[in-house]
Length: 291
Image (tube, rainbow, N blue to C red; front, side):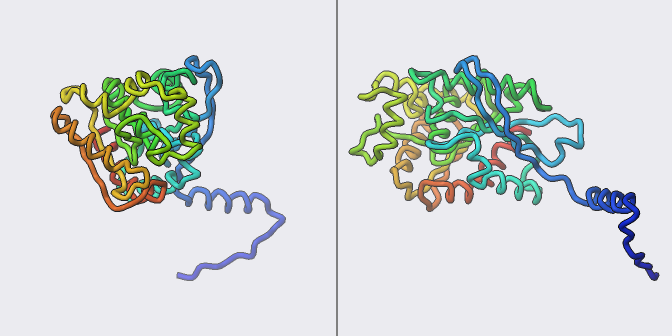
């Protein structure tokens, strides 16, 4: 078969439009990362967030499960895209490694997502954020359709919620969660910036009662195997802050309580190189629980 190639006629704008439409229709749908904000009654102010929508979102009437992502210290809602996690998820979606779901990251400042003197940041997540997402986006409502992903400071918060609010999420996964075997101190290796963040939330000196009330290693001792969400935790074996020790302690406590969990301690340090390299197992774990 011979195909005649006709010369392009710039005087026919309809032809340009038709060609542009053909290119658009031939391009597969892509995921989209959007930013937004909402009024938080818990904090009394507007709070920013990021939502990572799957490629099928705009072209279907489907409702989706949601993974809520809690960022680390000195980060904000934009960490999901800035740290390359949106790119990793896009590749997982393209390969069929994970099904379609939304990821929502909220700006929690350096709050450790704690209800404390600096604000009611736990309520921001458990009340305001979930309510906003489930009333704004086409998502499946209810705990069976929600999962929680936390990194470092956010991992500390995610595990705390797993043990204190197991009714909210079907599954929780964390990377390099801040699991410390006692209140932080400069002697343990915390830098000045870290200590300022700790003091802002937990007091200076550290309020032992407030710390204990929010410590995942303490809260895990009351975890109930019959109500616990599915748990996946990992940490680099060479984590510079010594957090692998806290993960081993947590795993031992959960074993004693009979709480099912997955613990991985692969080679690696603290940081987003480690997170990007191990995001696939955690997202696959969460996606399986959401099915």
